[in-house]
Image (cartoon, rainbow, N blue to C red; front, side, top):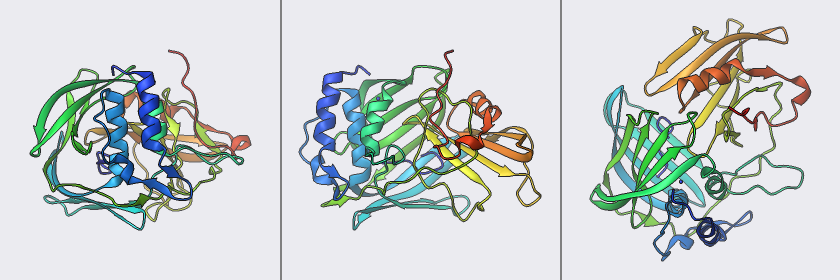
Length: 336
């Protein structure tokens, strides 16, 4: 299951990836969405990448209720989780059971892999993630364990550079839902553990999950001058009631980790943060005050990457009014 917003492949065989990917993704279309029954009676995956792909589709298609625990440097929290599908639209809820009463809720559809183009078609996210992930991570199968009373298979996900963290995932052998996830730094030290402790038997949705609408790229005069290789701009709505229209926000991802970039005017109407690195639990935020095109701006970069990556992204934001009609992303990292 997808992790909440605060949290939330490999002995790889290319022929196996292509064959399994076609079998799983051939049941979706722009008009009708994804038929979750495609996941029923599938053969047990043999390669790590195939397990990873199965888990991505399972995230959308299984209805469940669960209890979980999150363990990190800022303590231990327990949560109640649920996922449902109504009329093709997913509804996820994560509710903290201790500490401050916080509830996260998301309603959505299977996301696209990029912005819409001139008459072009954009792949659904699970397919695109699988095609992208092996370029930046090495996935391999670990041993089997028992978690939340269910048998699991472990995926070890090792980054191929120092620009991202490693992961371990334990997938339910019957549904491929993630039952446990561990985030690891470069020294293989555990930064965070998110684990289900109870899971009501999940049921496969008897119908389809809708695909997200095609989205046109936003127009902004600023863009990241540098991103780690593999991080691409995500076609998601990045405005909310929390931020006014003058706060720009773009989200970038490599398929496992994400980086959020905020740019807002320094005008006395927005909170002014101290420049430098700020610790946010297991994550960091890099803050920089700059003047671009004569405008004083505050740049904030947050994400699930090493802090030096966030700092470098914050230092490289560019003001490019001549490129305001292009997506603010897809910047390639220079050769190291």
